[in-house]
Image (tube, rainbow, N blue to C red; front, side, top):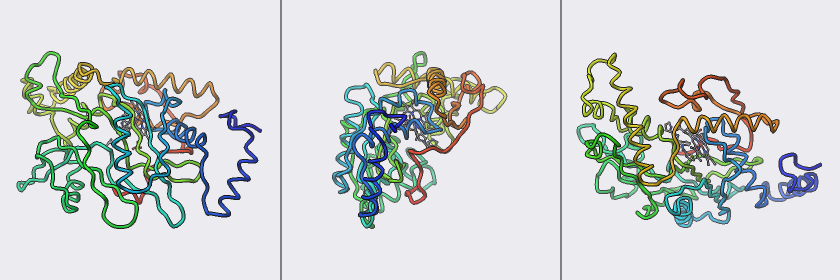
Length: 348
Ligand code: HEM
Ligand SMILES: N=C(Nc1cccc(CNC[C@@H]2CCCN2)c1)c1cccs1
């Protein structure tokens, strides 16, 4: 009997016998390269909160299961960033480090993403930078990180550990961190705000779980959808909280909710983000395009006879929901495996 998914994989029974024997001997088993690649792609395909799954078959997999030492893990994360965005074209990529094995837990990356900005807590209680990472920044400083120049966009170091005890801290070299300055196509005052954002979103705190094996360090990247930066990272009150700033510069009636000043500011912030990435030639998608692509993916999956899990509250974009086609339907959010999962013992 062949794998319905993957005829090239050959009959499954002999492989299952091999796996059971290895588990009997060692308490775990080792994926073949083909199993690892397909498992990672299937994990992406099974991610019910992801709107970007149309290209799930093209995920690039960097097999680094022989790497466990924190210094080497950090070096490979830097290489991942270079490899994922060789110019300004971004390529969906995952790097898989050593899994947990009995008696030898795999390495763990403490950062939520490979690239995140520091949040410096000032004496007056205000935060310079990203408030979401104020606690993480404070912890890193206690672990000896000297801190950056103190701008609102200081890139945090990687924190990686393989054994119990404090993590290794490793700065990211500037050439591995592609960034885009934010300007607006019509408002020249926009770039005076000095805003910027990094090009490559790379999640580093989720476990890649395939056939019962947990790869707790398996950073994966895609490209950004503009709303993530324009409607959440730069707009949320507990993030960079820029809606009042943008609205005032636009001359809007900030004191009166019914003027919809927040909504006007949100749209212009998102226009600026899409415009800036386009001008910089860096891969980014908008929420209308991505919504359309997702429904194509959903239809293809149904035609392939597969259940495509989806979580409405994550799939529908944070602005203009009902102006996108993903809003006007229901989904089933079933948990499938392989998967990218949040494990409780991750250091959030
Ligand atoms: C290629 C372009 C991609 C786009 C535009 C995209 C877009 C998104 C967006 C907008 C979210 C919601 C994030 C949020 O609201 O915070 C998301 C979630 C997610 N994406 Fe994708 N994605 C892409 C590629 C990928 C890849 C390559 C993977 C893994 C191999 C992936 C796995 C996931 C997972 C696991 C989540 C849920 C995260 C969680 O539960 O916290 N995505 N994606
Ligand atoms: N475009 C992306 N965005 C993304 C995907 C998964 C998870 C996240 C981060 N989600 C957490 C944030 C923080 C609060 C709400 N959302 C972003 C990708 C990241 C990695 C591959 S694609």
